[in-house]
Length: 138
Image (cartoon, rainbow, N blue to C red):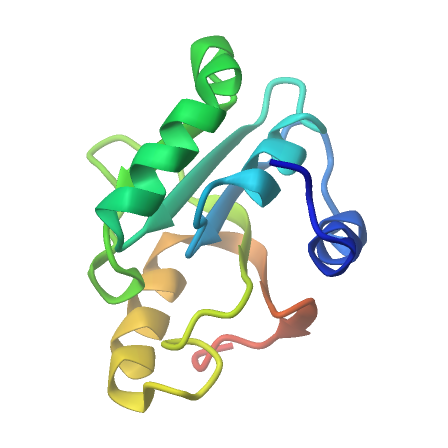
């Protein structure tokens, strides 16, 4: 699935370097995660979504990126996300139209921010709907 012009502009604006670890929250069918993975050489994208359907679509569409080790897709809500044992934190976290992060679901947002903050590398950056945001603790 190709990126919409809006999503392409958001991905293009992310300050991605080839070795970064990137987390996409609310990946849907995975188009943005695949576009980010294509910019990586040694880096890695973890794409998450609460929807089993979206995760299935993202895994199917991203099979090539998953096979190369540049992409992993997990079914988990933002407010429940945690690094797996031994997993390195993320340099960039981004989300587009995620209710827990854009103010539509404030309680889920409070829980999600705690999880994001815990998974962010020192100096890591968070982008919501194309804008860089400060995490509540930073």
